[in-house]
Image 1 (spheres, rainbow, N blue to C red):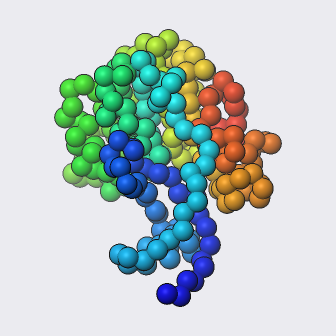
Image 2: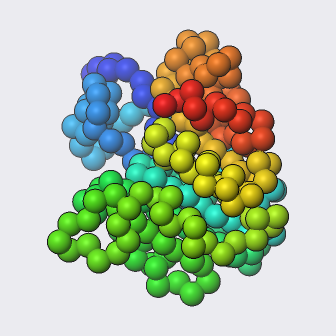
Length: 231
């Protein structure tokens, strides 16, 4: 076998360990040399993986026993999916669960079979929106924050997990603050262009914070304002 090095790219794990004993899922979007090479792989080809690195959404401590609000925008559902799956597979350990998901258009929706399952479940609340509807879309139309004013959540007992494109964070945070959500109850995944994963290259640095070492999941109380720097 001839090994041809192409490079490295950071990729989030998108599945929960509760779903498999011997593997995990990742979503790889074709956007550059490394990911293009991965899309050209065939079954049986090998890739090198190191990690995982960084922090995670605190499903085993802070979130346990509490209500949970998941807010996912676009590809932000990829890393949030692992936490959602874990919580749903341990449903009795948590209170009320609400999932909000928004995409730019219906064709950009991910994991559509799971979305349909979430919509049918009677033990969670699931709301979805698209920025711009097509002729076949009969759901909510508008950015993800249009779903938030109608939420009926107990702020003091709700832990919020947010992940999405940079432009989303400012407006979601403004809405959460308007809802009087305590800052210590909000967790953000400030994913950024990571390269080395060990705090050496500086690609992921935001105002002196290294996302790969200190994050990517942060409590908003600790990093208030950093979500502005990733825009």
